Amino acid sequence: MNTQTTRNKVTSRIYGNKRGWVFTSSDFGDMGSMPAVRRTLERLTQKEVIRRLARGLYDYPEIDPDLGVVAPDFYTGVRQAIARQTKSRTIPFGGYAANALGLNLDVPGKIIFLTDGSPKKIVIGKMPVIFKKTSPKNVAVSWEISGLVIQGLKYMKKRYVDSRVIDQLKRVLDNKQKDQLLQDITCAPAWIAKVIREVAN
Image (tube, rainbow, N blue to C red; front, side, top):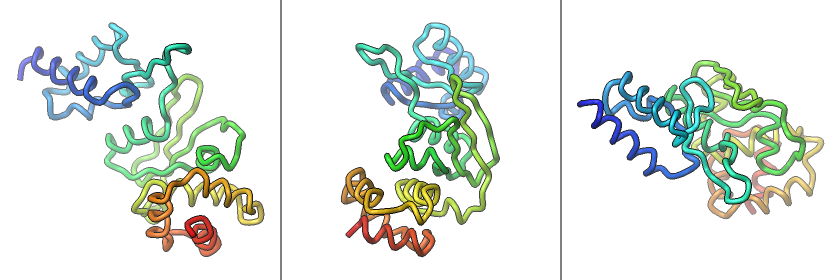
């Protein structure tokens, strides 16, 4: 496959995934040699078609008509790009998980994901993003929402999970997500399983 063909295929995939997509060079491994892929990404970065977030990590940035270029989506963007690259499972951890659900309004000073892959730390802008090695059982949930809720509640701690927390989860989760939580209920500690039943019912 020649360089021109690789360039066209890479560019087409980026446009096809639409704005906001976060990716690594490994997302184009079927489109030519890695040197050709990396040259294409470098060229698109120089042309400001894509944005380099960290070494080997890029996005096709979303543009707000008033604010301009939008910050990348860490939960569905950065996390999933690294998971694809490392062929690992990842879930949000700690304050970031609680914040993503609206259970804790404090803006975290760093974003932590649990992973069954290799540990990794990157910095995007000024935000440290840490992939913390954990045992496979901690990321064994079938649905992403389950991992988010379980870790968010663990961060809040049992004594602080009250009716306000339960009502918030009822508001932010749709019926499909509540059903998914019930399917993963055996992955949660007993006290969190009880909360999940309250939220889902």
